[in-house]
Image 1 (cartoon, helix red, strand yellow):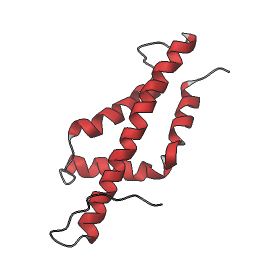
Image 2: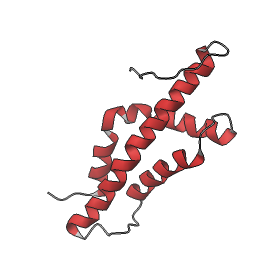
Image 3: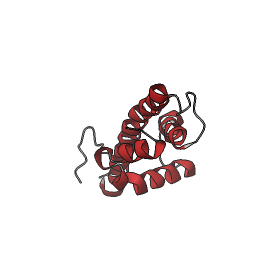
Length: 114
């Protein structure tokens, strides 16, 4: 079976409701750029760069190299998507705490339920 970047991207975005979180990603980046959301830049930029790498036509290992060309994209996706989803979950907790939290309380551990 021939893998293309489009097929890899389709598989990646089906990961644990990733598509549903896309608007949250844009909102998170917007609030981070405004300085409202306190997050380390590296925790947000690296996963986004990973996604851009997979989408872009420029590769470290070209896709015409049968196995290795696809594996580098899969490796980047396997690191970028889960990291980005974790960051979005943290953002959603922060946003809920900011909106509904009582002054002086902190959410320590919680699970996001859709």
